[in-house]
Length: 82
Image (tube, rainbow, N blue to C red):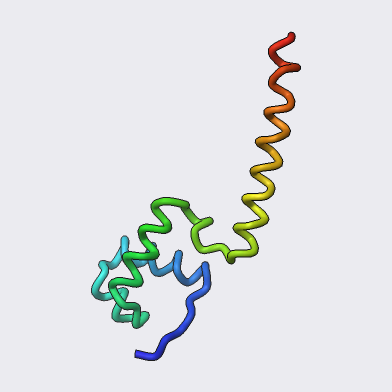
């Protein structure tokens, strides 16, 4: 089997199709190894659709979340003073 890369959308489609049509049929159809499927499934269960974002996008998201957390921490004293 030749190695190929699947897009985020393809991975989500395959996971959905496995749920609808069964693992063996779907993995054979897309030439996906079971170990690859299990890896995708685990990532999806842990992070949802965001699991398949590029590393750059994940980094941007983490930075944004950290900024929001910092902003919230700064607002807590003001809110408690009310």
